[in-house]
Image 1 (tube, one colour):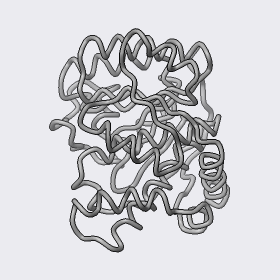
Image 2 (cartoon, one colour; image 1 turned 180 degrees about the horizontal axis):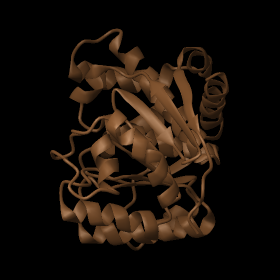
Image 3 (cartoon, helix red, strand yellow; image 1 turned 45 degrees about the vertical axis):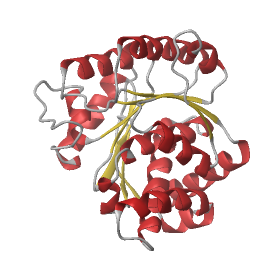
Length: 277
């Protein structure tokens, strides 16, 4: 835990020092809030989805975040093009498979992006992650109906199969790259009462991946930071509307020192890993 906590603090400092550009092709519902969250954190967001500019934008971004929350054919093509460009440059690509398992289009698109866009890190709830491997995962809209515990056992094998780090978020978060698995505790129940907090976690993970070449420690750092920000935001508010604003404030004010001493992360497993070709 101490090594992961120290890494999280170092990564937060790097973000605030370097102001990395995070290119988001994300959904209409969360676009404004996730941009503000990245700004509050200390990163620089760009929300570009036009097919005729995404490759150029991806060429100078520190990370690319793909979010399938509001899909259309042009957006899918833009995601594939941007991902291919990022992949060719070695830029981290983070996928949020919003609602995967709920419809064939979402599941098919998530799977396509993993292989064609060179996804290096996937952040989703338990049902979304399970849908990437299992047919018939019980998904109710974008709500998780499988627990983190149910997904954790297969996440390591799936991470190895896909050649990507997987972050499963819920009451407790699980991050695995097939060789290492960590559990992150934090957050607050009010986070489930505000739309887009999962998408915000993914965008923030993009910022951490932009400064940390190891997707596993980047994801652990991001989720520990976001969970602590959620706890801090809930200290002075008790309802969703004020919590949304308090969360932005917490993302801005949470210090690397607080993150180092206050985050709760444990490595819970390790083993051999084989990368996909």
